[in-house]
Amino acid sequence: QVQLQESDPGLVKPSQTLSLTCTVSGGSITTNYYYWSWIRQPPGKGLEWIGFITYSGSTYYSPSLKSRTSISRDTSKNQFTLQLSSVTPEDTAVYYCARDEGTTPVDWGQGTQVTVSS
Image (tube, rainbow, N blue to C red):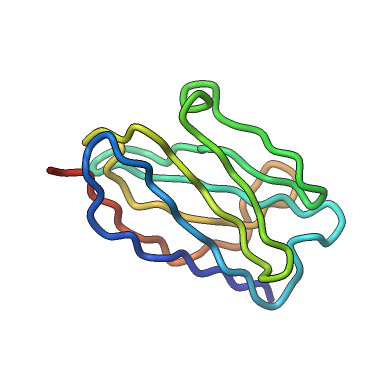
């Protein structure tokens, strides 16, 4: 079974770039047809899809976050990384990485709390 673990950036200051890494075990991020997503849940709100990177390295982003988002990967470490620039307190959320089958996340990391505050 695939397991995912998010890094813990903790507190991020407004205008900085948030960087999160997801370490994958039990499966390769280059396995055909696997997609790897970032999803977040702000306090008191529902889940919000941020974007994903495919097994071949292609990326797709939420239109509302596209201008500030970059997802990359390190195949040698079996990791993929989210960078979200120019953060504001509205980016405060629990951030999850996940493995998708089709458009459905099926394996999830435990989530990491990110707080944007000065």
